Image (cartoon, rainbow, N blue to C red; front, side, top):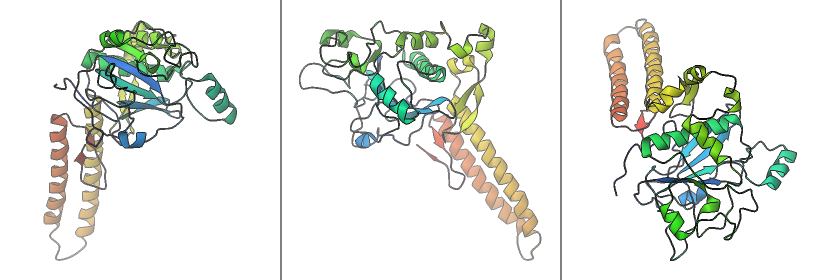
Length: 326
């Protein structure tokens, strides 16, 4: 089956990418999303991909954003669901899987709060987490036609746990479903995450029908024109874009990479000027030849990045090394 549409999420990190390893998945065409919670406060290695979702969203509390770690291509099966013998397929049933770092368990939330462990309690996520999860929902809708709908009850944990939790789908319902659901809805599974995630609110924000509370005092024009941050392939803040640009198909990853390239080229130009001053103070040195060699290296680096961008590849740039693609 052909993978249709962009397979890499703009701004995602690929530091834990398993799609080309021993646990790489099958091709499919995603039409639904299963949401999990990690029940942990940090990113894990998923046993080198053996139990990995498609992406993990990790809170950056200082920057107030969710950092996306992509583990498989969008249209590649992940491994975060149990798939029992017989019955139905789970991981390979056209499902995009998201792990939200944090907890849905009120007892765990209370314990972490008492211990001073910074975390997201996903039944009551902060506005910035809703914003970023809604952005991903909208991107998946615009690029892979996943409906911005659910229609399911997200039951509070721990009542959501178990095979007979009252919300788990039958085999037939699972096979027909499109849109957004939770681990608590997947057949052949027992887990109850993500608990009482406010799914309808998140999807309403993604559809543009609701705002987060931090946007409540803004007019529609102010919301549409408000600058939102985006991050480059190195995980650093690269600039801002409006909501319209986000949802209008702007290639933020390409913009961020070009900005990084421009900065590197500026550094090289400054270094070349400094080197010229040094070389001009010495005899028997062909200054022009040395500078020409430096310029050739810079041109080769720029060409490699531009070719990668044209091919739709995420580019990771290390100032100390030759640019490479992943």
